[in-house]
Amino acid sequence: MAVTSKEVGEGRAPSRWVQIKATVGAWGFMSPAIILVLVFFFIPAILLLVLSLTDLASHNFSDPWTFIGLANYRRLFNDKFFPKILGNTFRYVFLTLVFFNVGLALVLALLTSHIGRRASFVFRLLWLLPRITPSVVYIVMWRRIAQTPPYGIINWFLAMFGVERQPYWLNELPWLFVVLVNGFVGASFGMVIFTSAIESISKDLFTAAKVDGASAWQIIRDITLPLLRWPLLFVTSYQTLSLLVSFEYILLLTGGGPGLFKTEVWSLTAYNRALKTYFGSHAWGYGAAWGFILVLVGIVMSVIYLRVFQFNELMQEPKIDVL
Image (cartoon, rainbow, N blue to C red; front, side, top):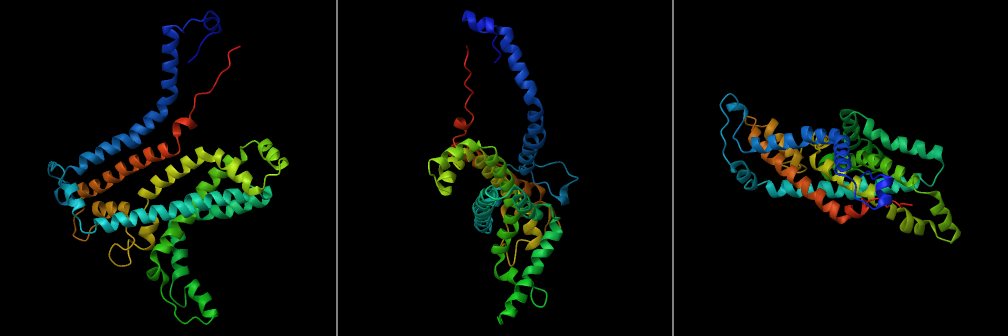
């Protein structure tokens, strides 16, 4: 809130007009973001909720909407594959997030921050290749790596060492490949964010720590990591929400298999129920119910992260000294 020097000197509270101008100015600056959130999140979420309360499908698309209440949600929770799909989703998000999207990304950022600038630039560029490679090309590369002889790269190396058993590794270890494929893409995003945050830390802090005899690990533990709370909150929250709704690479790599729902996650199930079916009818209302549950889970996870990382402390009001 803007306060004039005259008002400060006289010890008076700012006028009503000044408060109105400050409020209008603040809302004016926030209005573009508010409009984007309304158009691309709240309105679609409301439409998704309304759609999930109907029996709308491709076979009755021309008929008036019939509201069936919570029938789609009862059907969802009574689905015999519901526990398996839920477990697949938690496994996929946890393993990919912890070991790659946050863990490996942080390690890469720390490593590249302690080597020459030119070498670190080349190293980061190599890690960005999975993200900028077209999805289909990227998945074809991984399928070629796991393929059976004589095309599989893994089996080609194993044959050089006399290993006779050469299976189709994508069927043998589907979860390993799902996590690796998505992890190498996600690690690049966190690496860029963490690297920028590390380079913005004042070099005087590192110099003073080295003068006091601190080791590299002590500097990382006591200086770097505490100052990365905000980037860690952002990357963890963003990547969690991104993994919850992502299914592109799983669809292209395994299609949810091998077998019945082996690697199928929640978002892929919502897509299959709404836009792909084996029975000739797209169940849009039922698929919307799966999708809306995912929206609620995302909101809950965001609130939890804000609590865990103590968001209120990270966003403290600046202290202004009035002379």
